Length: 150
Ligand code: ZN
Image (cartoon, rainbow, N blue to C red; front, side, top):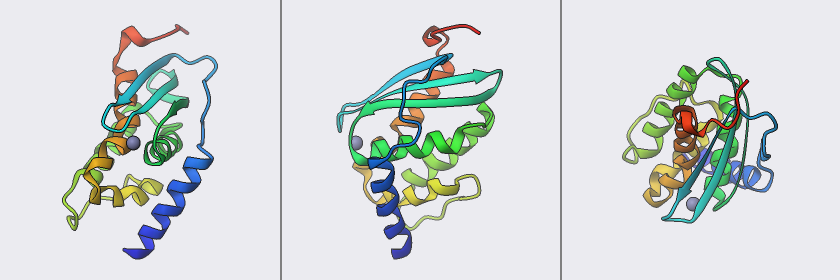
C-alpha cells in the first residue's frame, strides 16, 4: 500500500507538471467542456474519432493537480482505443475511485490508472479525478458538440 501511495504521489506530480496530450487538437471531430464547481477544475477535451476508434485526443484546462494528472493519464490510456474499450476502462476506474477504502477492485483494464486508487481515500477528490472521464462521455454522446465533420 505504501509503495502504491509513493507511486501515486510521484505520478500525480509528474503528470501535473508535464501533462501529456495537453494541447488543442487540430482536426478534432468532437469537443466537450467539463467543470467541477466543488474544486474549480475546468477542462476542455478534444477528440479525433475515426468510426468507433479514438484516434487522438488532447485537453486543456486549469485545475488542481489531481484533475490535471487524471486527465493526462486518461488521454494516455484511451488513445487508440474503441469507444467500447474506453467505456470499460471508465467503468473500472469509476468503481476503483468510488469504492469503500479496503474494498477490492478489478485492475485488469486499468494499467497506470491504478495509481489513482488512493483517491478513494479522499471522497472530495473523486470528482476531480473523474471530471475528465465525464467530459469524455459528454464529448462522445453529444452530437450537438461535434465541432466539425470528416
Ligand atoms: Zn480538483
